[in-house]
Image 1: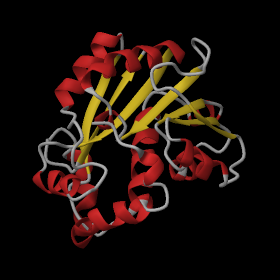
Image 2: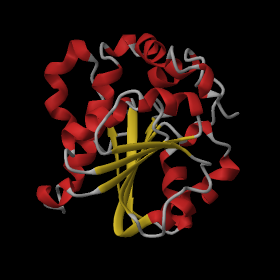
Image 3: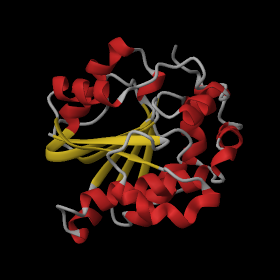
Amino acid sequence: METNFDACVNDYRDIINRVSKLSGEGYEYFIKLRISLMKAQLQKTIATDALDDYSILDFGCGTGATEIAMKESFPRAAIYGVDTSRESIAAARKLGLPDVLFMTSNKAALLFDDNSIDLIYSNGTFHHMQYHSHGLVLRDLLRVLKKGGQIFIFENNPYNPLMMKAMRNNPFDKDVNVIHPNYLKRILTTAGFVINTANYYFFFPRFLKILRPMEKHLRSLPIGAQYFVSASK
């Protein structure tokens, strides 16, 4: 079942903070964590000054909170946020972020030219779609991505019982289609992407944050609260 986020705009942040309370961390913490994980992965093969000039598409940008963190990590990048929720985009535009363009878009027909985007980021978007639409969406994302460009898709880990409990307690996540890592890798490959890596993250809640430096050694273990898959064109 697909979610009507127009009705959640004013409460979205508070809902996320409530369902993530057990983790000891809040909405902005997880946004910054995802951006830092993506940038660290990119820097393994791409020079930082090259990343600064990237064009970045946030597919399913919501109210634009992620773009605040993106501008901090990619200050010279041209950033595009797209979402099907008109109310979310209206809220995002009110942030007044420089060099960030927000637009509503049909998720299966993006308003970008072929080979025009360097990097695509998407968090928690695919579990709000019907399974049968995933392939069509991914093929259009592949179309707009430049040759050698990368996509990073972040999702909740279905193997983590605490994360699944949090999703059931979330009014806009409780009836969604859970995305398994192997399924995500398979549909990316079928759409024409080449898989780079699949990593799990957020293993320790805040009261155990002293152990977080160990997480870089645990990325392959399917026990983190969330995971991401990166792939290239």
